[in-house]
Length: 426
Image 1 (cartoon, rainbow, N blue to C red):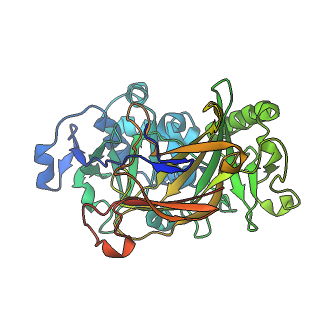
Image 2: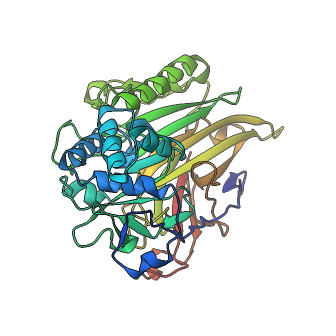
């Protein structure tokens, strides 16, 4: 892990995300070819899962149940974990249809799914989540590595199409790739039922505060920000699917058990999804831990996984050291998920997101590692070349990582035009 910033005074070192664009894309038995691309595809057993799911989606009942399951997900980008989903009633129906299409038993197809790493199962494009109403236009692509971008997708009739065509001609893409760190969306759509996966008023970003205890264990808080800028800890979610509700309840229970040693709930109030009932609470204003050092601003360009339709999962891992002894005093992490990127401009994230509950004014210096997280066994993406300190003041420091010519000088598609702009406050 390389260091982004040290504030005593500022020294910077880090490394820029390497986005691999390797190709994969097998042609399982029974698939047909829509383009010459398929002639060079290599057989890979996991692609039987992708093809089976695609063929199952020929059934309008299956498409409808998948749409509803995506819609009910509380996670950023409406993600599901495939291996968890297939244990639900809707998932069991999907497996049965996929197994029938592939000419195997449901047990055999289930075993094929469970032999794969945990896979996120979702529609990465926001535009497609907003517009798809269950039509038979779904392509399914699968990769077992975040370093390998699929080159093809399977349609419900078994055809293989180039991934570059998966978002054209009215098609939509369902993606399967190794499961990543997840945050619950802030300000989720209120309606449980709907015609599309996502409504226009649905939240896009998930924010978590991760406190590292002296034991080395971590406690994760899913945060919710009010219109007035106050942060709250979300309570467990009773509206999630069963497998998701269990995960959220366990996370919340762990947070409550550790609250006494954390002291972080002196800063956060616990709140339901609709924060208007909680506005009497709000940020902690005093006590032993001090006010937080925050990540205040994030803007990414051409920093992305897979085909760049999905969001990023950034972690800002802070450590505070004593100015006198250099001993480690405190650790904390801000995780922000669903941050968009690509070769076009995206709206930045404005914080502040609490990162560590101390400041450089309290006798410490702070190091921050910035990573775009990837699931095991892929290493997290670090950043290079060294960040450029663009602006410094008593309360803020702004860094540009990557192309330091500024946003206005890069042209669309330019290979060196990768940048992450960050602002820290304390």
